Amino acid sequence: MKTCKRNPGWFGLVALLLAGCLLSLPVVAQSQGGPPADARQELMQALPGVTSDYWRDVKGGVSGTTSSTSPGADTLIMVEGETWREWRNNWISPGGLIALGGSASAIFLFWLLVGQVKLDKPRTGRKIERWSRIDRTIHWYVASLFIILAVTGFLLLYAKWFLAPILPNSLWAGFMIAAKNIHNYLGPLFALGLLVMIIKWMRHNVFNRVDLKWFAKGGGIVGKGHPSAGFLNGGEKVWYWLVTFLGLTVVISGLVLDFPNFGQSRETMQTTLIIHAIGALILMAASFGHIYIGTAGTEGAFEGMKTGYVDEAWAEQHHDLWYEAVKHEAISEEELEALKAGQPAAAEAKT
Image 1 (spheres, rainbow, N blue to C red):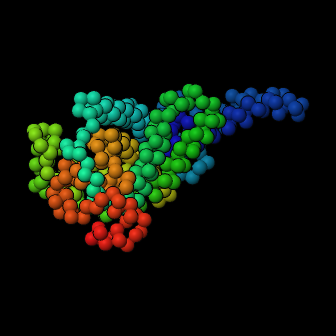
Image 2 (image 1 turned 30 degrees about the horizontal axis):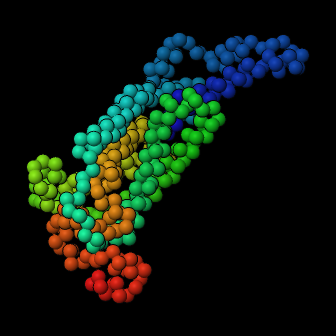
Image 3 (image 1 turned 30 degrees about the vertical axis):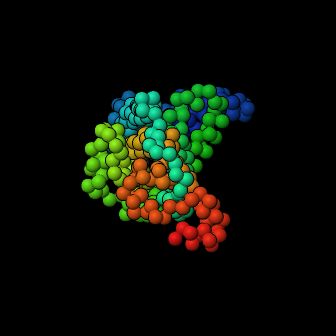
């Protein structure tokens, strides 16, 4: 949806065109040898009955019969739009910056105080498959689109404060149109990937008593020893359900905004945009923690989603219950390389 500052609406456009035509009348008249026309008089003749009381009613959103030539046009200014603008600029925009900045600051502080979670034991060099090729494909498909949508959405909400003042108008307009189109067209593709991911991984994300003990120990921060965990720990399950509920909220609201040709009113679109922005900003702030833990925050974690395999030492330390169930499947790095090369002997060695 275009912002009110950049798009004055149909009434404003008509007014600008009318004013332009009236200002051009003297030039036309002089070129034809006639006397200059009085622009103000022409305007009053074109809009009879325009009084101060009339404009007060317009500003107040009072409905009624007008002299507009548009069928059914009985409200020239929608005052709900001003309420939406105040919510967007006075609450959502600053609130989003607080959420994003607070999340990034908390992660940075945690890194300074705790640092990277290292492996307690040396690597064994034996690998266990954690994520299949299809799992990794789904993850990186959704993650890539999420990052692009997050960046373009951030620009649509905030770029006017730091890019508009320094870019030429034509370049600014082209930049924002490109961001809007990328955001709008990739949204439905993200929705498809998200649905596949939710369905594919739901069986791994059912909470149990093991997760309660994991939460009690703060994922290993409280007390001694690393808490037990199955294939996924309690924190990973929380992230899954956060992505599920907030992701679906963002997707559904985004589709409503993407396809305004199903009879949605302008008020519905404005409310939906507020919901979309709030859900997206919360999800973006939470994603900082997920990205940190899966990369710089935990030694060996990124290898699982990059290659599909993790070292035995990592599996035993972070997911001991899962490790006990699959440790017989561990293979050496040489066997893994042979397996990737498609050598039958490696497949037999794995089994």
